[in-house]
Image (cartoon, rainbow, N blue to C red; front, side, top):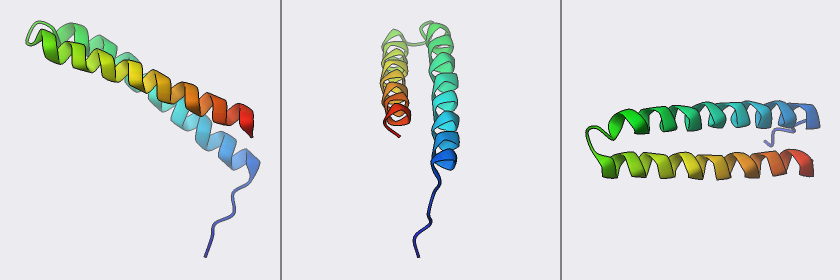
Length: 67
């Protein structure tokens, strides 16, 4: 059985994901700075994860515009 979604419910879901991603991206950046004292390489990986999260967020914003 398929679950029908309204445009408004999709917008709410996308907004939730966008906010969630932005929060994680900021957290990754903050922690990368701290983690650099333990491992510079790990900090670089985490910074890259933040960049990838930002790319995901941009795609979600694009999906919002495409509704």
